[in-house]
Image 1: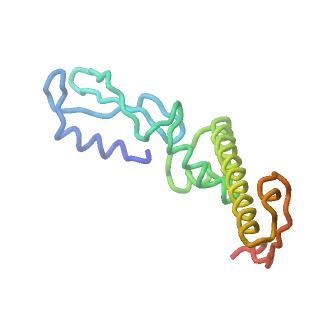
Image 2: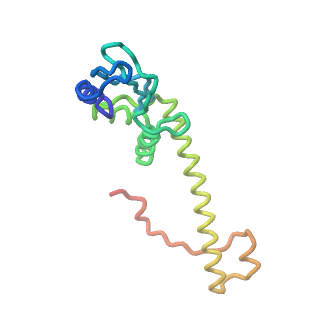
Length: 165
């Protein structure tokens, strides 16, 4: 079973779609290539065994990877689940196997890199906001505001972040 049920679509196409080459009804969708959950499909005429040169993808692609695969990694990595858990989940849901470990790791590294870049950007923005607040409150001088030095800031942590639920 695919994420989209190709057999159900084929059943409908047999009755309503006609071949652009011979004008006969009886088109089916054939899987040409699979990359994780993303699939490349082609229309095939049942009468002539003619396959359309136009292929289409079941999910949008960014460069050479399907966004659906990246989304799967993005959905499971933040909750601490890896490739093995993804395989089990797909099996339980009766969905196709996900990408292999190597592409999974590439997706995870790409997401980690993007998250790290965002973290640095957000922390820098937060530090600048604190520096501006302290300056306008009269707690630091103009020189300290413009320098790239560490300034003292009080932080209160209640510990609720350490428990789940």
